[in-house]
Amino acid sequence: MKPFIYSANPSRVIFGSGTLKQVVSEVQRLGIKRPLVLSTPEQSRHADRVEELLKGADGIDSTGQFNNATMHTPLEVTLEAMKIIEENRIDGLIAIGGGSTIGLGKAIALRTDLPQIVLPTTYAGSEMTPIIGQRENGIKTTQISPKVLPEVVIYDVDFTMTLPPGLSATSGVNAIAHAVEALYAQNGNPVISLMAEEGIRALAKGLPVIAENPNDVEARTNALYGAWLCGSCLGHVGMSVHHKLCHVLGGTFNLPHADTHTIVLPHALAYNAPHIPEAMSRIANALGHTDAIEGLNELLTKLKVKRALKEVGMPEDGVDKAADLATKNAYWNPRALEREPLREVIRRAWAGEPAA
Ligand code: NAD
Image (cartoon, rainbow, N blue to C red):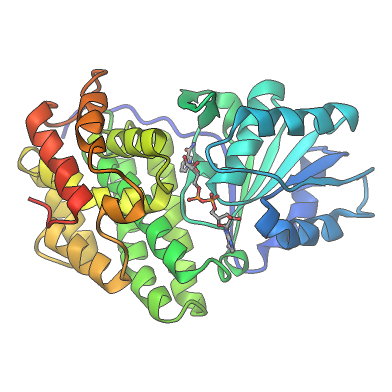
């Protein structure tokens, strides 16, 4: 066994159905008196439910909402929310939503160190990480800070029931991608590898059922459980070429986050495959298959997801630009980053050809 270091990120996780109601005791436990509830315009009804529970509870003086969270955490939206925080002397944040809403809470916490309670409603996993991505003047940058790691995460399966089947599928594969790369991370460790395998297994079990019946509670529970485990992987170990490619592609061509991860994953895995035999066998095992890439392809076929970057808005002349950007800054990957083979990975993903 390789030597390893394992340090766990400090956060409290509550998981189940109907767990929303525990938001009151968690707010009280953290001593928050003036919480602000964050969401997107589409999920303002979810934010209303949180606010209804908190209103009039012991020790809570006032509650408010900011429902303008936006993809990629644009600076202007964060500044708009900061004004409300200051004017209303807000002393804690409750984010209910996907990565975009959680990103807004993190951006505020980065500036204020306010405590965060997060209720995730997609499978993206941001709630388990100390990572924050922000967009300013069209450029997205990422940083790591312990200030942005949420203090409490409340997973309530009930709130995931409304996640549309298409987004459930791609968001779930986004989560699987975290676990896949954790299995060959340079700073990987046996605990995270166990979580990664179990995370892939749970999502591979739940997602095909959700694609057929989005109201299946057991499948939704498996998927959210898997998303938690995969989000933990992302929060604890470094990611490699797959995440780098998705960051470059999403940031440069403004592509949808979860679709991009879904399309790129088999191609990025095929690039690394000859260098990661143990990870390949663990991924295959978790997918219930003898071969990791074939298993992944079968899962994606069942999920009926888009398979080509050209279908989600990437221009053909972007292939070279992406290859240049993906090899520009050195970062660790199990296989050396070679421009021509990587360009071929991007071209295949653009065209929707099988991974090779
Ligand atoms: P999202 O948060 O942008 O949500 C997409 C849409 O789905 C939104 O309109 C949202 O309101 C809606 N939605 C979410 N949950 C719903 C539900 N249960 N029912 C109905 N509608 C629902 O999507 P996402 O994929 O979760 O997040 C993507 C963003 O998160 C990207 O900006 C990405 O960079 C970031 N992210 C960050 C990290 C990190 O560690 N910092 C990790 C993963 C993703």
